[in-house]
Amino acid sequence: MTPTGHRRLILTRHAKSAWDDPSLEDFDRPLNGRGRRSARLLGDFIASRGYEPEEVICSPSKRTRETWDEVASAALEVRPQLRFDDRLFHANPATLLEVLRSATAPTVMMIGHNPGIAEFAASLPARVPLDPEFRKYPTAATLVVDFQIDDWADVQPGQGSVMDFVRLDGR
Image (cartoon, rainbow, N blue to C red; front, side, top):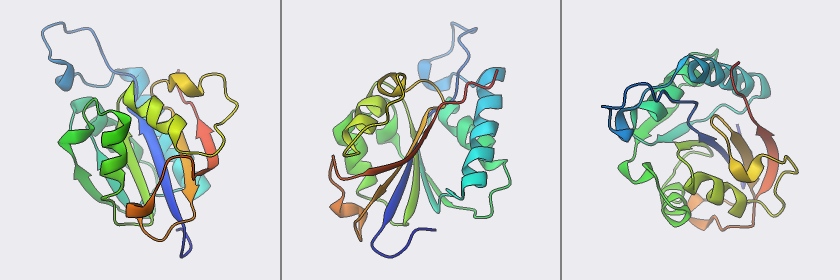
């Protein structure tokens, strides 16, 4: 839970997806085994750190839905409000910001896609993490960033404070 005057964003790129069926549209690609493992590890990480979201805004693609399902299978104490937003499928940073500004809960998780999510993540904090992979934002990468605001409508790039950045590859 976040205190009054604070908002927390958990920004996640979907876990590793399968490329073995060339007949599938990009939207319909599922997670592979490694992706399922890394998403479960991410759920454990979120629960262990107390970063549990109260609201989840997720791209409706198969791989983002499955990422959330695996994260949610962890021992999360809170069952968040879940909504799928078509605008998140391959969204650019401006669209991601617009969607975030529509959030209502103090702690929000967004699950989306590169390249937009990497650019969005880099735009949010005053100082980005020193991790050499941060700007690439690999699959299942997750940034936890806090804002000193009362309402998501007030969020601005460059205002955030990084609480965590984690990369989990599920190997």
